[in-house]
Length: 135
Image (cartoon, rainbow, N blue to C red; front, top):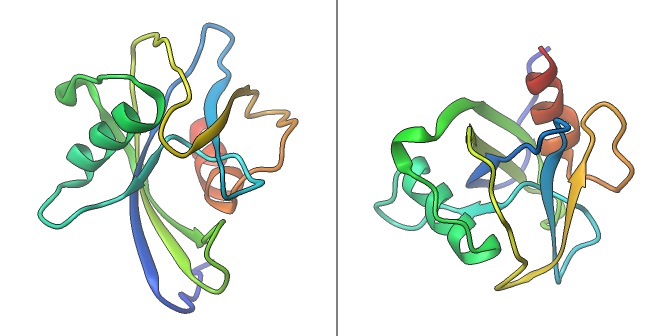
């Protein structure tokens, strides 16, 4: 079913990193209780790919190779941290193992099993990205 967009649209780009168990790296920002993918808002003139790479470098200290980011899709969901707003996420996958560390506004990192998440997740991740990964 088609979702109705309510309120302002926040455009973000984020990356799915998986470990050898198939778990997905999630981050929790200082200002939130919900875990989400590493990523963030696009800046003026940035493509979603450029924004995704810049944000993961800032948030988890990982430098990705732009040509290796593969689009998973673009998804809309209620924003996790801005009540009444909608987030449009340009989501990419990355094929390589990474070594991540929390930096910038990231309070915590967690590897989450998409089939059995044990944390409170942002709507975009729970309702859109995890189902897309499983299909």
